[in-house]
Length: 131
Image (tube, rainbow, N blue to C red):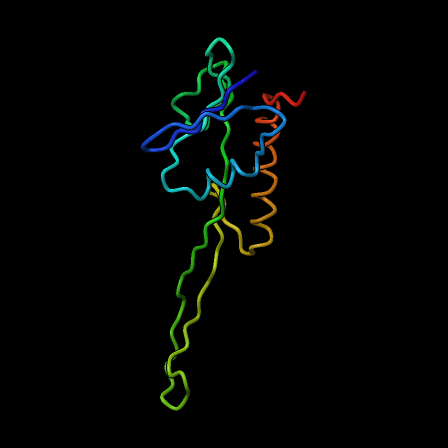
């Protein structure tokens, strides 16, 4: 059975990759935990099979990248009118950044994140023993 290791800044956590493994919880940890460093999967002979840390990726190791969405706002103009409440109106442009790609709408960005993370999930599920 393969063993997954979640590495944090202060400690390591071992995870059994059996029928009880949930990849959505792993993605939540990867994208939201501030202390998270990387995730790796090892086999019985202590050979690295999968990693989320690029320098550890060699020829036989699968590199998985879990993406997350980031909001970028840019102020394009400010209009001032003393007789209006509020007196200043700011015009902003919102863009959604995902892994270097920029999207105008959040819906398209979420679709892109869903498909990229689904591909990563399928690569991780390949090493999970569901017997």
